Length: 249
Image (tube, rainbow, N blue to C red; front, side, top):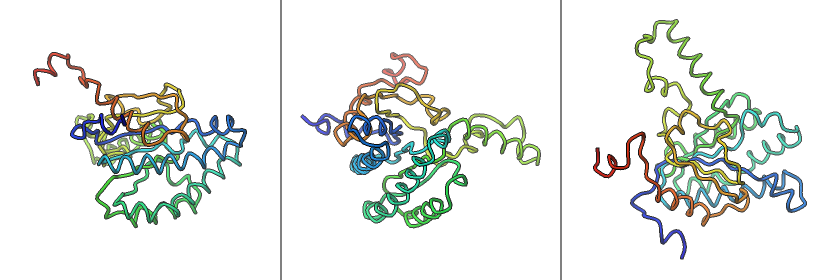
């Protein structure tokens, strides 16, 4: 029985985040260079995006490139940037056909100009799409994002735009790059690693975490559906007791 038959379609998370991990190890297992693994991983991106759209998930955030990834060998970074541009060019029309809106979070100004231009073009082209909001995290890290928020709050305080007494969770959230999106209900990480890796630390406070040993290039539709099914088996309490949840308190 497919996991699609097991899933309760009335209880689908509206926001799923994914740490796409394992491209390099997959390539090594197949006797190929790391870049080959990244290329194969792009097919998994297509399949997961299509599956999320089919399930009518509203937001899907993919961790594509962290600020720490700049430390990788230049050849690999250059290849990743080229692959990113190619993927946007190849997939834009399909995204538009599927009514998918593209958004990007992260330190966009640190990306090569060609990548910035392609991102801007794709965002502009899909801005009126009303289906899945596909959010790509590029040159992103939570520590970068939180420090950026703190600096901007300090600037606005210094310019008398905010009062220190008004600084609370809601105000802080408005200074994050994700202020337009709800927090993820579910985080998926592939490859068997069980850590967050500086990703959406503020936003994941009450997210369900799902770890799988499947390497990202092997992570396909059925694997994504399994993650959604496993999410549906959990009880989300947000600090309350199980009895409170059952009684609706």
